[in-house]
Length: 172
Image 1 (cartoon, rainbow, N blue to C red):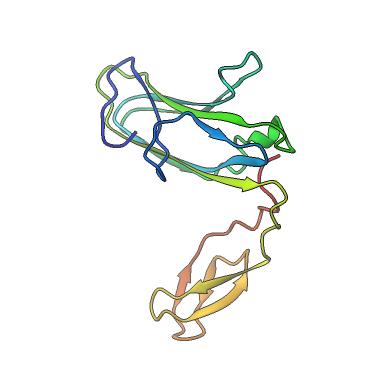
Image 2: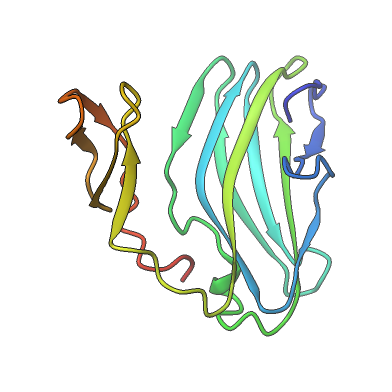
């Protein structure tokens, strides 16, 4: 939603940041889509709705968050919404849409961002290790995927990285 306002009572489709195209988008047969994190920073009260196959009688609408104006929020919401809930084998294509609703009394400024992973069914599971690069000296070392506090073997300084160890697979 970044870059333009939403008037009081209005709504806007989010954009695909890879293409800048407005949603909805199509998730092709044989692929799944899963939200892994959500962030908002806005000036008005908002409600964010995710939709899978909304144009069909069995379509799904899921509330992805409600936030008061002037606040910001970031959450790792692993498996908050996934096409695998409704089609675990990705046997069908699905439409995907996210709409931000301004429920405040004035024009809404700010942004909303969802990080999603689109996977081909049968994708090899995540590795148990990750290669970390020290931001101080650029030394590269292999650590367990669960590691968050890394002591560089090159310069001895400590830095932090993200832990996605709970992800054995996406969706479901």
